[in-house]
Length: 259
Image (cartoon, rainbow, N blue to C red):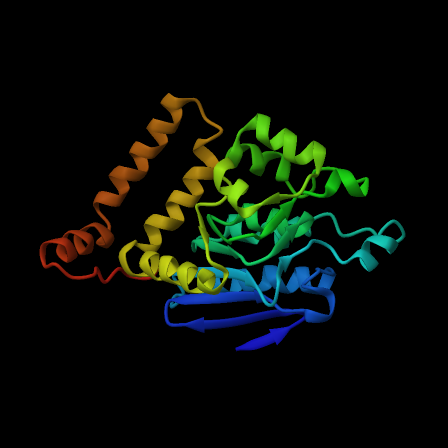
Protein backbone atom coordinates (compact mmCIF):
# COMPACT_ATOMS: atom_id res chain seq x y z
CA UNK A 1 0.00 0.00 0.00
CA UNK A 2 1.23 3.49 -0.78
CA UNK A 3 -0.13 7.04 -0.43
CA UNK A 4 1.28 9.59 -2.87
CA UNK A 5 -0.17 13.04 -3.56
CA UNK A 6 -3.41 12.21 -1.78
CA UNK A 7 -4.06 8.92 -3.57
CA UNK A 8 -3.77 5.58 -1.78
CA UNK A 9 -3.21 2.46 -3.89
CA UNK A 10 -3.21 -1.17 -2.85
CA UNK A 11 -3.66 -4.47 -4.64
CA UNK A 12 -5.31 -7.40 -2.89
CA UNK A 13 -5.12 -10.37 -5.20
CA UNK A 14 -6.93 -9.64 -8.46
CA UNK A 15 -8.67 -6.49 -7.17
CA UNK A 16 -6.84 -3.19 -6.70
CA UNK A 17 -8.20 -0.26 -4.73
CA UNK A 18 -7.57 3.41 -5.45
CA UNK A 19 -8.62 5.67 -2.57
CA UNK A 20 -8.69 9.45 -2.56
CA UNK A 21 -7.16 10.19 0.83
CA UNK A 22 -6.54 13.86 1.49
CA UNK A 23 -8.34 14.55 4.77
CA UNK A 24 -7.16 18.14 5.19
CA UNK A 25 -8.94 19.07 1.92
CA UNK A 26 -11.85 16.57 2.08
CA UNK A 27 -10.30 14.79 -0.93
CA UNK A 28 -10.47 17.89 -3.12
CA UNK A 29 -8.13 17.43 -6.05
CA UNK A 30 -5.11 19.48 -7.09
CA UNK A 31 -2.90 18.90 -10.13
CA UNK A 32 -0.47 16.40 -8.50
CA UNK A 33 -3.38 14.39 -7.10
CA UNK A 34 -5.05 14.33 -10.49
CA UNK A 35 -1.84 13.15 -12.17
CA UNK A 36 -1.34 10.50 -9.50
CA UNK A 37 -4.87 9.16 -10.03
CA UNK A 38 -4.21 8.75 -13.75
CA UNK A 39 -0.85 7.08 -13.06
CA UNK A 40 -2.42 4.64 -10.57
CA UNK A 41 -5.14 3.61 -13.03
CA UNK A 42 -2.56 3.04 -15.75
CA UNK A 43 -0.41 1.07 -13.31
CA UNK A 44 -3.35 -1.18 -12.46
CA UNK A 45 -4.23 -1.62 -16.12
CA UNK A 46 -0.66 -2.69 -16.96
CA UNK A 47 -0.47 -5.20 -14.09
CA UNK A 48 -1.47 -8.69 -15.34
CA UNK A 49 -2.39 -9.71 -11.77
CA UNK A 50 -5.02 -6.96 -11.49
CA UNK A 51 -8.38 -7.80 -13.06
CA UNK A 52 -10.64 -5.12 -11.55
CA UNK A 53 -10.22 -1.80 -9.74
CA UNK A 54 -12.35 -0.13 -7.07
CA UNK A 55 -12.14 3.68 -6.77
CA UNK A 56 -13.43 5.28 -3.58
CA UNK A 57 -12.75 8.05 -1.06
CA UNK A 58 -11.53 8.06 2.52
CA UNK A 59 -13.63 9.71 5.20
CA UNK A 60 -16.94 11.39 4.39
CA UNK A 61 -16.27 12.46 0.78
CA UNK A 62 -15.58 10.69 -2.49
CA UNK A 63 -14.12 13.73 -4.25
CA UNK A 64 -15.80 17.16 -4.10
CA UNK A 65 -13.99 18.32 -7.23
CA UNK A 66 -11.00 20.54 -7.79
CA UNK A 67 -9.46 22.21 -4.77
CA UNK A 68 -10.98 25.69 -4.51
CA UNK A 69 -7.55 27.16 -3.84
CA UNK A 70 -6.50 25.80 -7.23
CA UNK A 71 -9.58 27.27 -8.92
CA UNK A 72 -8.79 30.65 -7.40
CA UNK A 73 -5.48 30.84 -9.28
CA UNK A 74 -6.27 28.74 -12.33
CA UNK A 75 -6.77 31.74 -14.65
CA UNK A 76 -3.07 32.58 -14.31
CA UNK A 77 -1.93 28.95 -14.37
CA UNK A 78 -4.29 27.05 -16.70
CA UNK A 79 -4.01 23.23 -16.79
CA UNK A 80 -2.24 21.47 -19.61
CA UNK A 81 -4.51 20.61 -22.50
CA UNK A 82 -4.21 16.82 -22.27
CA UNK A 83 -4.68 16.37 -18.51
CA UNK A 84 -8.12 15.00 -19.32
CA UNK A 85 -6.29 11.71 -19.87
CA UNK A 86 -5.77 11.48 -16.11
CA UNK A 87 -9.33 12.46 -15.18
CA UNK A 88 -10.80 9.96 -17.65
CA UNK A 89 -8.22 7.22 -17.04
CA UNK A 90 -10.93 4.73 -16.05
CA UNK A 91 -12.61 5.10 -19.44
CA UNK A 92 -9.47 4.07 -21.33
CA UNK A 93 -8.30 1.34 -18.97
CA UNK A 94 -8.90 -2.16 -20.27
CA UNK A 95 -9.52 -3.35 -16.73
CA UNK A 96 -13.04 -2.71 -15.36
CA UNK A 97 -13.32 0.14 -12.84
CA UNK A 98 -15.99 0.22 -10.12
CA UNK A 99 -16.65 3.56 -8.40
CA UNK A 100 -17.75 3.29 -4.76
CA UNK A 101 -19.13 6.77 -4.07
CA UNK A 102 -18.99 7.02 -0.29
CA UNK A 103 -19.89 10.71 0.07
CA UNK A 104 -19.71 14.10 -1.58
CA UNK A 105 -19.15 13.72 -5.34
CA UNK A 106 -18.96 16.94 -7.33
CA UNK A 107 -17.33 18.57 -10.34
CA UNK A 108 -14.11 16.79 -11.19
CA UNK A 109 -15.02 13.96 -8.81
CA UNK A 110 -18.36 13.61 -10.58
CA UNK A 111 -16.57 13.19 -13.92
CA UNK A 112 -14.28 10.55 -12.42
CA UNK A 113 -17.29 8.61 -11.12
CA UNK A 114 -19.08 8.85 -14.48
CA UNK A 115 -16.03 7.57 -16.35
CA UNK A 116 -16.02 4.36 -14.29
CA UNK A 117 -17.76 1.30 -15.70
CA UNK A 118 -20.09 0.69 -12.75
CA UNK A 119 -21.10 2.91 -9.83
CA UNK A 120 -22.26 2.01 -6.32
CA UNK A 121 -23.19 4.74 -3.83
CA UNK A 122 -23.59 4.96 -0.09
CA UNK A 123 -27.11 5.78 1.06
CA UNK A 124 -27.42 9.52 1.49
CA UNK A 125 -24.32 10.40 -0.56
CA UNK A 126 -24.68 13.74 -2.35
CA UNK A 127 -23.91 14.42 -6.02
CA UNK A 128 -23.69 17.61 -8.08
CA UNK A 129 -22.15 18.53 -11.38
CA UNK A 130 -21.46 22.01 -9.88
CA UNK A 131 -19.87 23.51 -13.01
CA UNK A 132 -22.57 26.04 -13.89
CA UNK A 133 -22.68 27.29 -10.29
CA UNK A 134 -18.94 28.00 -10.41
CA UNK A 135 -19.09 29.86 -13.72
CA UNK A 136 -17.53 26.91 -15.55
CA UNK A 137 -18.56 24.73 -18.48
CA UNK A 138 -19.21 20.97 -18.75
CA UNK A 139 -15.63 19.82 -18.26
CA UNK A 140 -13.62 16.79 -19.34
CA UNK A 141 -16.18 15.22 -21.67
CA UNK A 142 -19.01 15.04 -19.12
CA UNK A 143 -21.41 16.48 -21.77
CA UNK A 144 -20.86 13.18 -23.60
CA UNK A 145 -20.59 10.80 -20.65
CA UNK A 146 -23.62 11.94 -18.67
CA UNK A 147 -26.23 11.77 -21.48
CA UNK A 148 -25.04 8.24 -22.25
CA UNK A 149 -25.74 7.28 -18.63
CA UNK A 150 -28.97 9.13 -17.84
CA UNK A 151 -30.32 10.43 -21.16
CA UNK A 152 -30.24 13.88 -22.72
CA UNK A 153 -33.07 15.43 -20.75
CA UNK A 154 -31.79 14.45 -17.30
CA UNK A 155 -28.18 15.27 -18.24
CA UNK A 156 -29.16 18.77 -19.31
CA UNK A 157 -31.10 19.23 -16.08
CA UNK A 158 -28.15 18.16 -13.93
CA UNK A 159 -25.54 20.14 -15.89
CA UNK A 160 -27.48 23.36 -16.40
CA UNK A 161 -28.87 23.56 -12.87
CA UNK A 162 -25.84 22.25 -11.01
CA UNK A 163 -28.31 21.17 -8.32
CA UNK A 164 -27.46 18.72 -5.58
CA UNK A 165 -29.13 15.30 -5.68
CA UNK A 166 -28.91 12.20 -3.51
CA UNK A 167 -27.68 8.65 -4.08
CA UNK A 168 -31.29 7.51 -4.06
CA UNK A 169 -32.13 9.94 -6.87
CA UNK A 170 -28.98 8.87 -8.72
CA UNK A 171 -30.31 5.30 -8.62
CA UNK A 172 -33.65 6.48 -9.98
CA UNK A 173 -31.86 8.36 -12.79
CA UNK A 174 -29.76 5.28 -13.72
CA UNK A 175 -26.51 6.98 -12.74
CA UNK A 176 -25.65 4.39 -10.08
CA UNK A 177 -26.42 0.68 -10.13
CA UNK A 178 -26.93 0.16 -6.39
CA UNK A 179 -27.35 2.19 -3.20
CA UNK A 180 -25.75 0.48 -0.21
CA UNK A 181 -25.65 1.27 3.53
CA UNK A 182 -22.51 3.36 4.12
CA UNK A 183 -20.79 0.74 6.25
CA UNK A 184 -21.24 -1.89 3.54
CA UNK A 185 -20.30 0.15 0.47
CA UNK A 186 -16.65 -0.75 -0.03
CA UNK A 187 -17.26 -4.42 0.78
CA UNK A 188 -20.09 -4.53 -1.78
CA UNK A 189 -17.97 -2.85 -4.45
CA UNK A 190 -15.11 -5.26 -3.73
CA UNK A 191 -17.44 -8.24 -3.90
CA UNK A 192 -18.68 -7.09 -7.30
CA UNK A 193 -15.13 -6.43 -8.53
CA UNK A 194 -14.03 -9.85 -7.25
CA UNK A 195 -16.85 -11.49 -9.19
CA UNK A 196 -15.68 -9.77 -12.37
CA UNK A 197 -12.08 -10.80 -11.64
CA UNK A 198 -13.09 -14.43 -11.04
CA UNK A 199 -15.67 -15.18 -13.69
CA UNK A 200 -15.17 -12.72 -16.58
CA UNK A 201 -12.29 -13.01 -19.03
CA UNK A 202 -9.94 -10.01 -18.81
CA UNK A 203 -9.63 -9.86 -22.59
CA UNK A 204 -13.41 -10.03 -23.05
CA UNK A 205 -13.92 -7.12 -20.68
CA UNK A 206 -11.18 -5.03 -22.30
CA UNK A 207 -12.60 -5.64 -25.79
CA UNK A 208 -16.12 -4.83 -24.59
CA UNK A 209 -14.95 -1.53 -23.12
CA UNK A 210 -13.45 -0.65 -26.49
CA UNK A 211 -16.71 -1.69 -28.15
CA UNK A 212 -18.76 0.57 -25.88
CA UNK A 213 -16.66 3.52 -26.99
CA UNK A 214 -16.50 2.68 -30.70
CA UNK A 215 -19.79 1.01 -31.59
CA UNK A 216 -21.97 3.64 -29.92
CA UNK A 217 -20.85 6.04 -32.66
CA UNK A 218 -21.69 3.68 -35.54
CA UNK A 219 -24.93 2.89 -37.38
CA UNK A 220 -26.39 -0.42 -36.20
CA UNK A 221 -25.32 -2.41 -39.27
CA UNK A 222 -21.72 -1.19 -38.98
CA UNK A 223 -21.67 -1.90 -35.23
CA UNK A 224 -22.95 -5.42 -35.87
CA UNK A 225 -20.40 -5.98 -38.62
CA UNK A 226 -17.57 -4.81 -36.36
CA UNK A 227 -18.80 -7.03 -33.52
CA UNK A 228 -19.03 -10.02 -35.87
CA UNK A 229 -15.38 -9.62 -36.83
CA UNK A 230 -14.40 -9.54 -33.17
CA UNK A 231 -16.64 -12.53 -32.43
CA UNK A 232 -15.03 -14.65 -35.16
CA UNK A 233 -11.59 -13.72 -33.84
CA UNK A 234 -12.61 -14.72 -30.30
CA UNK A 235 -13.58 -18.23 -31.47
CA UNK A 236 -9.90 -19.05 -31.95
CA UNK A 237 -8.64 -17.63 -28.66
CA UNK A 238 -7.89 -19.60 -25.47
CA UNK A 239 -10.53 -17.71 -23.46
CA UNK A 240 -13.37 -19.55 -25.21
CA UNK A 241 -11.92 -23.00 -24.56
CA UNK A 242 -11.29 -22.16 -20.90
CA UNK A 243 -14.72 -20.61 -20.46
CA UNK A 244 -16.36 -23.77 -21.79
CA UNK A 245 -14.09 -26.00 -19.68
CA UNK A 246 -14.93 -24.08 -16.52
CA UNK A 247 -18.64 -24.38 -17.25
CA UNK A 248 -18.50 -28.10 -18.04
CA UNK A 249 -16.31 -28.87 -15.02
CA UNK A 250 -18.39 -26.68 -12.67
CA UNK A 251 -15.43 -24.58 -11.57
CA UNK A 252 -14.33 -20.95 -11.91
CA UNK A 253 -12.57 -20.44 -15.25
CA UNK A 254 -8.80 -19.89 -15.23
CA UNK A 255 -8.63 -17.16 -17.84
CA UNK A 256 -5.22 -15.84 -18.91
CA UNK A 257 -4.36 -12.20 -18.19
CA UNK A 258 -5.13 -9.72 -20.94
CA UNK A 259 -1.70 -8.10 -20.74
